[in-house]
Image (cartoon, rainbow, N blue to C red; front, side, top):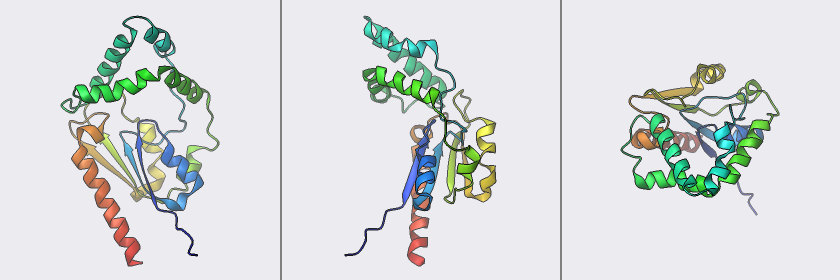
Length: 200
């Protein structure tokens, strides 16, 4: 019986999620490509600040009008970090807020665990094993949630493996604000990678 070949993996990294880099630690040969959405490489996945408002969020959500207050705060925060807002209609607002509010206790617990976590390896050690190409989509509209200079410095050892796509008028949500451009880049790279495998 022929052994089943593991399929290549492509990861899209949104915000501070590190699943793509964790896959590199386990099965680096399977990772075909990484796509970073307005984020670079971070030394740690721990949250920068577990604010008092976040710690109090479960209590706020339990009082009359509390969830409405938290919903308005989250919607306002997303608007502040987006360069374009036409995508953020009422349906999108519900999609971004309702699941968080429904599981606010779990959200805070996860933030606490991240705040106390310690990575098993340095970022440099993980980056040194990267063989897959990385595409970083960066929104050029002013927004507080964008990647820092240090996040790009950490990727410099990869040289030509890193492609930075700068998107004018876009904020922290390239996949929402410039969906066509992001999809075209991802599908184009996937097709080129498939053609290269076939040619071998």
